[in-house]
Amino acid sequence: MKENKDQVAGLLLAAGGGRRLGGRPKALLPHRGRPLVEHAVAVLRAGGCARVHVVLGAQADAVRARASLPGCVLVDNPEWEKGMGTSLRAGLDSLADTGARAALVSLVDQPGIGAEAVARVLGAYEDEESLVSAAYAGVRGHPVLFGASHWAPTAATATGDRGARAYLRAHEEAITLVECGDVARPYDIDTEADLIHLE
Image (cartoon, rainbow, N blue to C red; front, side, top):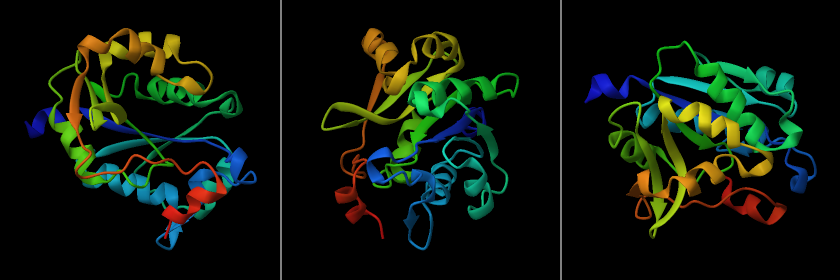
């Protein structure tokens, strides 16, 4: 199984500008003494993703300067203000011709989702046809694993802040749900009130 897991790249969407957080980029929010993007990359690596691509947008130069992301492929999304769909497209495009056969997509603003949830979703990977999602009390959430055969059609429907939602809804029956509610909490850091979740 390990050989298969090496074919899965972690894809971290970290381009958001934190509009409801006074324009503070989510990637640079402090968490445990370091930028949140570092924490999110560490979670992907600890969960089993040897390769990690990080999509940057808001204040990308500042993120590069202040966050330590060795070994990551940093992908610029100049259209980040148009929503998460553009980041998903940019990230999937960056994986073309890398040899990756699947992408495990996570969001920088969900620090309650740790390595154990990543490992569970990764463990359900089989091949390029795989479509796997974490679930919380049976409700689909992140991270989501997209086998390579899903990349182009997912990118084609990724618009605005909906990301892959439309594609996943249309392919509900093909998704393998992996329950993670016992090991992770899928809250988002969207508003000032949510900052209570950061340490």
